[in-house]
Length: 325
Ligand code: UT7
Image (tube, rainbow, N blue to C red; front, side, top):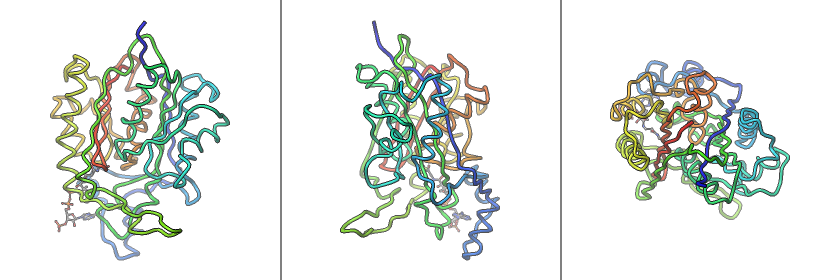
């Protein structure tokens, strides 16, 4: 009998400190940096984001999201036999956030590792978990996206610091006799490393290079719009489906203009586009599972719906996962 994987529970967690654009603009003004709610809303669709307290890490956020996903799936942590955490803001250089999450969940023994594909991390992690389940290496996986991007923001650079936020989302992915994940399509092109990066690294006990996020926003924007359409079309072709079969488009939440442009290219009405960037900002690898959980809990996404998840970001990386929820 064919073996597939299916999402059986979703969860998310946002740190309590919510910063509106006005709050952030007022804080930046004290440093002589000028921005406004009007600019941020018009260019990005972002109204607010959450920032974690200084002592809160990606694993702290990820554990809370994972607990919520386990509860939704009706499972205990001890049922889990694979943990993948998509993150670019790990607690430590090593070990992985996934190992720390495993320990915080009070379990041991199952494989646990991080996925580093920046804002595409969640679709990469979901694809790997699906493959491991299909080949029998895992049966019940926790796939988490967790980020504290506030730690790597340059608050003297208004072109980037107003865009990002902190948070975590998670899914439980279980082996199933009927297909949940229908197709996926992953890509990378390393020649674009420089357009979105945190170039610092640790060497000889010191941080060398700039350990804060740098982005050529317009260059990323241009690339993102093209690749999101091609990845969506590739997954549809692999699954023998068409645009019209998609019930909900859940793209990486970076910029409402990129998201709306993708929806238009897929001939989808904007009502079918899941939007949380307005309240979360760009939470990198956490943005898709955060948006998925919000749409499940609000009742928009229902069992049996066909979902198109899409990620794009640093690397340059991009990809899509088409699934039956
Ligand atoms: O998560 C990974 C994927 N990341 C993305 O998808 C991000 C992709 N890029 C974007 O979303 C957009 O390029 C941004 C939102 C980053 C920027 O929007 P834009 O429409 O491309 O604006 P721009 O960079 O061309 O800047 C327009 C103007 C500039 O002023 P001048 O040169 O026209 O005088 C900027 O200096 O807006 C200015 N500006 C700001 N003004 C007020 C840039 N940032 C700000 C700001 N507040 N925070």
